[in-house]
Structure formats: structure tokens, C-alpha cells
Length: 368
Image (tube, rainbow, N blue to C red; front, top):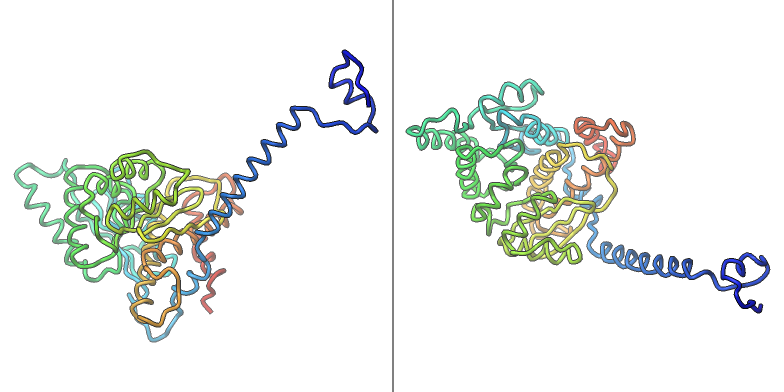
């Protein structure tokens, strides 16, 4: 077709539907843009698939079967260190989630003000009102009261399979100092420790509390992760190399396991990186991180039991119990959140997600 002088491109395009013309420049540009975007997205999907954990099979492998010969406590004893005047929901969410998944006993060590409130949420929790805040402690009494607080927690320590430190903890200086000592005692007793919420605020400023401890798990959200990266790696978060940066961060902190929460949860112990990407819920109500910390505590306890009972004969990957606990906890929370959102939509709350934990685990790993 011959285009007459002065005829614009649009008039030529519309002149005849039978004429085969090259598409307008704008269309070509859009096509090229889509090709580039889809190409990058395809590369990202392929990259993610390399790291994606086999979460369902891990859940099946580490979830214990019901055995009439087992007794109370053998399916897990979890303790949450947190709960103050301002925050009573977070420690409850973490502790009750552990029970809903299958732990036998769940304790909460909190301040005296928080204890009656947390007890009122559920009779299932064992609540210890032993933590103290600065407002109730005189300068002369600080050392004595701090030692008393640590001793109250320490006498229970050997009974626990895992500690969750941070949900609803707050940032009171005296309280944080006491919790620092509790972390040190847990570490000396080789008790796994999951650090979440305000516990991450404490640990980021005192990395020696967890550095080099392979049974420590950090579960930062986007802002907490940013602080960790800036403190440890002295740079900004690099999402273009998210896996490599997470690997370096975990390695720099001495082989702790880090579960970086996000659209895909990324998990590393400084040796490998795994991701959990199954879809959860678009609803971002507060408290889901507390569910995660309680869930990881249970699965970490079960993974350790399984590995100790089958040393040398266990075929599962990865083999690090902290990695297994993080993968299982992340996957289960996402499934429960999806089920809750399917039912509740915009009104979905953390309590709705908690109620879906048992059903979610049952779908993957039936009890009978």
C-alpha cells in the first residue's frame, strides 16, 4: 500500500481493515515493555523455584503421630517471654497458636499488670506474672529484683523445648535488661530461642546475645530486617540480591537462622537459603507475626525430637531443625490465613487465623 504524502499514520491505519500494516509505534513499545517485564518475571520465578522449600512434605515428616503411650509434655512445652501493660494480645497469640497446632503446654512470662488480662483470654495458658518494669522498681532495688526475675524464669527453664522472646515485650529499659539475662541463661541451657517483635529491638542493639548460637531464630518484618542489615552489614536492603544478602546476614551473625517475612518468606541459617511462597492472605491485620513465632516454636521442637530419635537415619532436607521449624511454621500460617480470608474476607482477624491452624495442619497431615 502506498501512503500519500501528508497522510498521517492514524488515517492510514483506519483506511482499510484488509491492509496489513505495522502496528503503531506506541503498540510496539508496549509489546517490547511486556516482553521485558515478563522475561524478568519469568527469570524471577525460575530463581524462586530453585529456593522453594518442599513445605508440605516437611510438615508431614516432622509432625508427630498420635501415640497412646506418650504423656503430657512430650508433644512440646513452649514458653513466651513477653506481655506488658500496653501489649497483652501478642503473647497470647503466640502461646495459644502453639497449643492450637499441637503443643501440650504453653507458658507466658509477663509483667504483673499484663497477667490478669492474658489469663482472662484463655484458661489453657500457664501465666507467670514475674517480669517487672522500671516504674515499679526503685534504683536501690534494681539489682536484687533483676536477679529475682531471672531466677523465677530460670527455675522453669529446663522444662521447656523452646522459648519465644519478644511478643508484647515493650521497650522498658529495666525489663529489657532482665530479658537479656534470661536469653543468656536459655543459651547456656541449650534451649532454642525465637526472637520476635521487641525482642528483635533488643537483640539488634546487643547482637552478642545470639551471635554464634545455632539454636537462635530471628523473625524480622520489613522494618526490623532493615535495622538488622544496616547494623550488621552496614548497607541498605538489596532486594535484587535478597537471597545472597540474607545468607550473608545470617553468616555474619554467626549462623543464627533468620526468617525474613515478606511476600515470600526467605529463610537462611548462613549455609543455605529456602523460600516459602504459597499464597496466604491479602489481609494484613496485626498479630500474624505472633502466630508465626508460636508456630515455629512448636515445629522446631518437633524437628529436634525427630532428628534426635532418628540420628543418621533421617531422610529429610534441610537437616537443620531451625530451618525445618521456620519452613513448617511459615507454610502453615500462610495456609491458615488463606482459609480464614476465604471465609471472612475484609473482616479477617488474627483470632480467625488461629482458629484455622488445626484444620490447615489436618489438611496436610491428617491425625488419623
